[in-house]
Length: 180
Image (cartoon, rainbow, N blue to C red; front, side):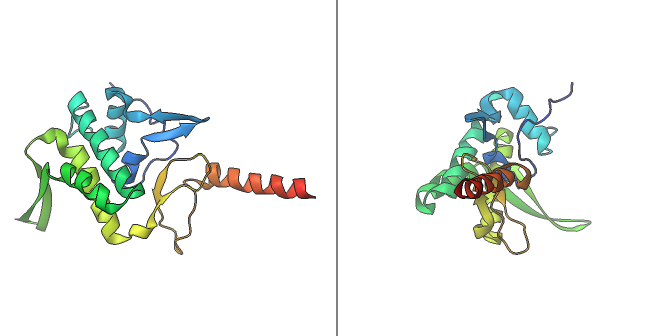
């Protein structure tokens, strides 16, 4: 059985932001990829996690909790969000090992259904350790997507130049032409 195509307008962001991007606006209506286990299967496949985790109601519930926690961390105060993120992180840990190829770290879970949610929360910690100022929300008026700004000078404003960036430029052009 093949997994349906991912319908989201922005994919390929770091795992934590990709989880936030399971909600997006289409023609003024908020879409939610995690509305059901079918959408969960799409998200797991899009992030290379389908072979490790079943798309079931338990995993879906944990991912929704992680999405809420990461969303609070991105949009609210860290003091309010920290307990939410920590609650997700409490379900896993990193195990350090020495392998024939050298040092390795691998996640361990008492309950494997927390794996995808824990990985997303852990990825959020990695992002804020690396460059918290590069976690952005699209500047497009009604866009609710998030991205990690990897541009050289750190001035990316839109989730996509082809979509939101182009709309903003067209809007500015229209406003200038109305003035003349």
